[in-house]
Image 1 (cartoon, one colour):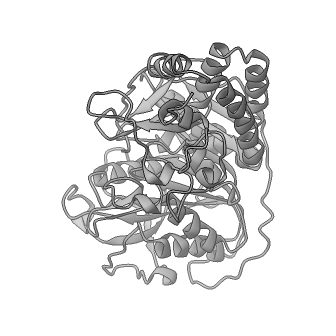
Image 2: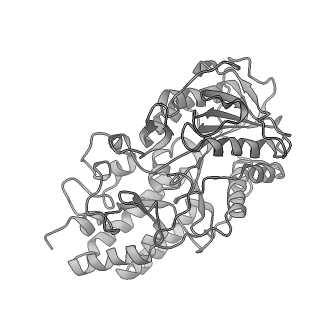
Image 3: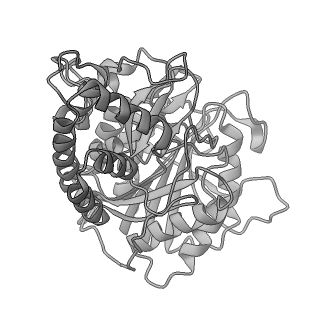
Length: 449
């Protein structure tokens, strides 16, 4: 779930790659202006923050908006929209309305004021009229698609970004809807949430063959390779944390002030500011980590990982080796989890490759993967170790506190009709319905040696 740091086994890390400043554009072409909200001049940036706060994070959403409004951001050059869905129960400030509204950020709020100053605007695509109550379900693909479409069609910019804000649990897909609280954009009013596939479909529909500069996750478990792999064709860069976040999430005052001070304000400048604010905010929090990846390198990264997993799988050739690997993962790998029975366990990929490479005497192959991974992970920070990668799902927690011996059907290749792209495409890592001998098959399901 979003926003409580909990390090179950060991702490996270920072990568050695540094960002290069860039003013790279995305080549989206001209978009048609269809709304009275449209600006006559072309902004350098437009960013949509998709604030799914119809849950116990409602107060944190208001706090984050206050952070944005007290920043030094020049809203004439960088337009920030936020679609805010509130809850009836958790916050009574700012009129205590409980529906859904679209806002355009306005800065200059006094630190002493507890009232939002941003401008409520019409959004015809979602049926939102300024000053009128409406209730939307932000876990609905339709809402996400039309929010993205609204941004792209009505605010002409050189750069576009999307920040998914709220609860998040990582890889979970459509077939896991029977498991409560597994997904993104939890909506307490409707009792629903968004699967990873639904998120992809919503963003893709709203973009209409265009591409964002970045997709960021101010959620828990947004920095998993499964998430980046699912969204790899929709943006240039991905930003997310592979573990849990505290309830306050990103610090938007620090982020926007740092970004404002940059001269070029390209996409990597924004990514750099996102990492900077996280490092400054959580320098003393064990388990704090954030990663920026080049989504254009996702397929190559995936293939390199699969090649390494094929070699590692072949080396797991006895129950003794299997038990040693599982024990090393449990005790020595960088691992992120909520920690309760049934919660997912994610492993830092670099940690997994480092440990298995050393244990199975795949030293050259391990080093090759780690070197080549620098092309994918372009920026990151963690407070405990030097070179983290994205996270990857490994297992869930059993009542005993150990790894559960059974994986969800959504993560077993061929066990469900609707599976995330990573599970569908992986041959050597994820378990298979026929138990054909992948890495996880060898560790959990192989009986004949």
